[in-house]
Length: 365
Image 1: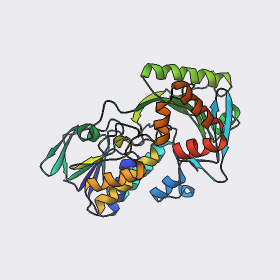
Image 2: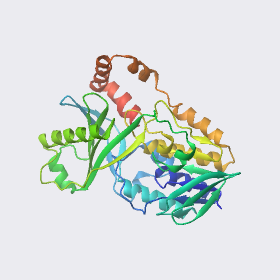
Image 3: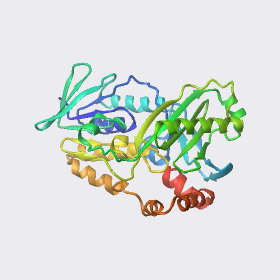
Image 4: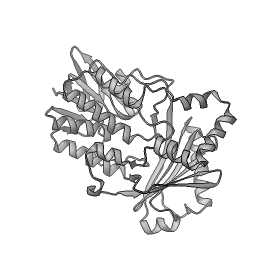
């Protein structure tokens, strides 16, 4: 028996567990993996997220890549955006996630790694979870923080088959900073590549000794593989990749973006945070910021004895109801050629690119 059961040990789950444990709640956190675990992600953490985590990036003891500029390549043309101060920080998720998980553990949360949820159901006033280890864990409230396929979301979140799902393929390889500087004159800055149909984008992000590259799009896995092959060909052609580079294998994952067909984020005995709630930012797919923010909202409501419905109201006030913005609805009504033209104008115009894409969609700056 525990006051709160958290399913998922990523940034959202760890932040919720840490905040609740230091508020005096008994918290148990389950994750199917053993940390540190491989978690591929372009991995940028904005100043707002550091503040929400109550952490100073200057004190962060792992790989950290601050940057003040980013680029977007469209139709072969490179468009750069700069800020007077640090816009965001590149991290490695396997390091970042483990640090947050251990912080929750040090605050008093009971962390059970390599523990997978096999059954979950309401039982009177409690939620009962059975695991692969033969445990039965009961709690009046469970926080689903297990990503796109979170078992809590699948059981209670009314996941719609019509939700907008992004699929990605990524690789992260340690090549050494010196070697990476030979490949790109823009070491330490995110380099993005818009897909011609604007249904996704690729990236090439050097973080210290590491290269993270990948692509994401709304579409099928077969389409994703073709897009990934095209991106790699483009990077080889311009010298950012060479045939002798020993890249780590590409891995895939999926997540729902916060547009249309929203999930039910709270109800009798449960709350969903981060990707489990389908909160990844539209256009960019950035998920660390929404995961941390929603986890703070959820844990603060529960710590003061609030109801799940209160959390849902706070979440809607912060992130909207999941429906497209006015600009998004306009783009949906336009014919494909006009929508693509509007997107090209935004990408090529400095102030629009900065405000609508990098700061609006990615949360930078």
